[in-house]
Figure 1 (cartoon, rainbow over the protein chains, first blue to last red):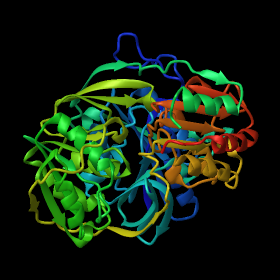
Figure 2 (cartoon, rainbow over the protein chains, first blue to last red):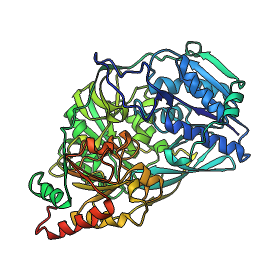
Figure 3 (cartoon, rainbow over the protein chains, first blue to last red):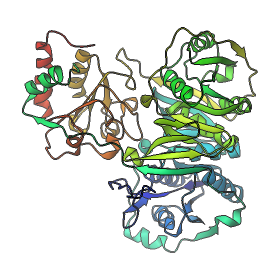
Figure 4 (cartoon, each protein chain N blue to C red):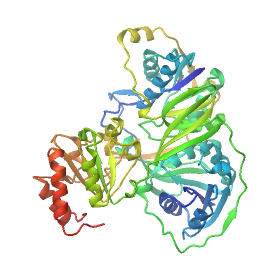
Length: 249
Length: 317
């Protein structure tokens, strides 16, 4: 079985983002970037499945500017076999990304496509579901457990009410939750080895996909600030404030 | 053209956030039709027809709709979409799973998790875990929108009498099979709609210690929340998680206990009306959003809190 894993480069989850003064977006210059966290879970899961002898190849793919290749390189350092970098400038909407991934799937013919359930920059939570619609494949979103069986997967999904288990036939798409596994760190020798693994570069314009934006981002602004609160000295004061000042209990 | 609302239900009754999504739909256009897809869901369809903002109900029944599988739902809605300018549903796990599948079939760029309708084509939505708000204009002919339920009030639930029209089922998608659902049943209010939420984090140190929170929640008639750290550590089940990748809550009172306040957690609760933080680390970021901060060891503070609550003559419900 061959697994394609899609990874995205985003502002690191620990960075307190700043909105640009002109309202056109957020500051990304000199800001630490890394792989979208649940995409790390997607890579980890694929590598684990391969290590268990249930997959033959793990291919990491990213869609983005020059530096997005770092995320593919990182995937190679934790066990992916080779990489694909679809080069495109600017920010693509999930619909455009899923159309590009569809072309990569047509070319690579993987049995499974994994990716994070949501990117922590735009918080859209769309790409996996869109790709599975375009391919007419089954989708298992928000996966916290994957059992690989003969030509099918049993997937536990985290839903608002608790947990749901579904069985999907291969080929299929899985979007991964943060609780799916504990992503490993790349060891120095493996980082060195990853430098020798191949990354194929493809220009998005060569794929014949319309990636023109459908949405206009008119403005990006700071959310309203909460006004500063107070520290209370003890529990009695807290309860008194909640009762008589805030009037919420 | 009218707006199509996708109803969320459990085949017996509507799920509460359908009412919030109905409000959002009615802010886009007053002509709101609602589709309900399920199995033996006539009672829920009737409930839907009683929402005064809904002008027409489309009911689709079939055994393959019993478990709300997106692969089965999407083709029905794609077919209906022809007559509508907008498709709307909640940005909870139901809508997040379903809507992008519809949008891709319609070749539409979805606008996810909106918190405000500015005009029928322009919406406000949080990005970067709510650390920025983006105003987005959609230029697609058909718009697929998911709404953040806690940002819209629930609509009236009685007084309407919309006609219910039957719609033919689509074929079953045979490559996805539902196995089981493990719902955690509780007599407590639902986390997403509770007036008070008491949440515990890594500072609780064990699942057993959550009973300190349970007691207080019972006393206050509150729902129980948790940080991702507490869920990851196995102290409590995933349906309690509040945050960027969990649930967003906007209660009147949010009490964060032993939660440091990572931006990913704040994303799920910082719009709460009153926030209380109890943490022994005075530098914890949770204090930056707290109206009332108590720097204390939670294992001393929670029993005292319970004692103080017991002294009160009345507690608002």
